Amino acid sequence: MNHFLWMVSAEVRKVFSRLIAVLAVLAAASIPLGVTLLMYQLRDGGPTVNGAPVGNFITYSAVEVGSWTLNVRNFLVLPLFLALSTATAVAGELGDRTLREVLVRPVGRATVLAVRVVALSLLSLVSLVVSFAVAMAIGLAAFGLPAPPVVPEDYPGVLPLLGGYAATFLCDVGVIVLVTLVSLLIRSVGLSLVVLVLGWGADFLFRKVLGALASFGVESAAGLLPWTVGNALGAWEGWATGYEWPRFLVLLVGTVVVGALAVLRFRRLDVP
Image 1 (tube, rainbow, N blue to C red):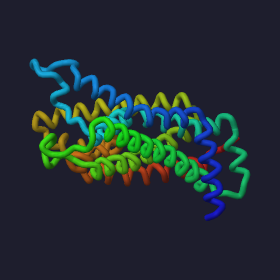
Image 2 (cartoon, one colour):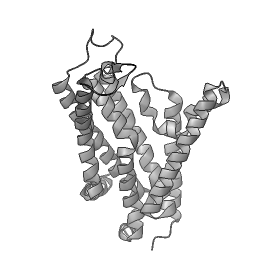
Image 3 (cartoon, rainbow, N blue to C red):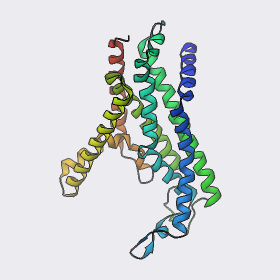
Image 4 (spheres, rainbow, N blue to C red):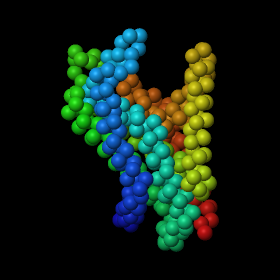
């Protein structure tokens, strides 16, 4: 166990020494600031809908800042940072042969892969903690906590929002494991990212088609929608209205299966 923790510590230092990790943390801290400035602008004016300012439909509170921050963070911003960090740690080190130096040690390949996933998961955790802390600090200073009669009694509070950030961490781990498998299969940082972006785009269009069919009363499409990969990786979205268990089930099973495939691929991989 001590040896594993030492390996994780060394890998964490390596992950956070890369520019992409530093930029990820900076982005996590910057998003709440940008969200708060946007909310201020909308409150003082901005576009209108049917003659009414958009700002009239916004709840100005720390929870709303945290909610907007979570949505912006998860809209490809931090997932792309995590994907690039993962591809660099796997495909990048395969390409520059630094991974070979690790494999010559008496350590199982599954352990080597697990260490990287844990270190990258810590990057996700740090980014989430930073986003949540900054959003709450700025939101409390700017707007305070939501309270009746400004908001309805069923308006979600800080604890449900914190649950959304925790659920996001699980989704991030799923992304990291998926990118690990793709990086092992393709062994190129650039091509891995291209394949992932194309895959996410195809999944997005597939879900839109299913949603359109469901709106026309196609029950099979409505039943299939929660079980798609994109919806599984977006399981955090239910923090305010209620979680859908199929999303988390697909996320859990998918992460385990993809992780097992990654280990199998890594064990059979010829590392030059």
